[in-house]
Every structure is written in structure tokens, then in C-alpha cells.
Image (cartoon, rainbow, N blue to C red; front, side, top):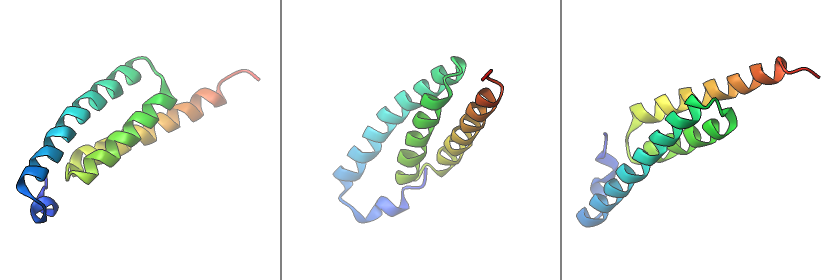
Length: 87
């Protein structure tokens, strides 16, 4: 977690931001896992996109990159599913 960009704000506010991100990202990760297991590609892409953005804003760049990969993979899965659907 790279919090260097947060060093310029108040310590209490910084702690609150990180605490809230940890709580919300934990739920977002659970959502991503459940949606992936259920093969719900569009909601998965949306959840991964949200996780990608919130993680990047808090300096969790590795998690943000992983979420981006999940987002792109779920969009690809949607394309494959649509291409193989009978018309």
C-alpha cells in the first residue's frame, strides 16, 4: 500500500480514509469473488471497475491492477457468451 500521496493531509483524516477503504474494499473483493463464481459477467465488470478505482485512489496499486485484469476478463467473457448465443 503506497500512502505517500496521503502524507500531505491531516493524520486523522488519513487514518479515516484508509480505514474506510479497507472496509469497503473487503466487501468489494467478496462481491467480485461471488460474481465470478456465479459467472455474472456484467456485474463482475462493474464491481471490478469500482474496486480498481478505489484501490488506486488509496495507493493499493497491485490490487488496482488485478481488479483491472478481472474487469477486462469479464468483458471478454461477456463477448464470448454473446458470440456463442443462438440468434
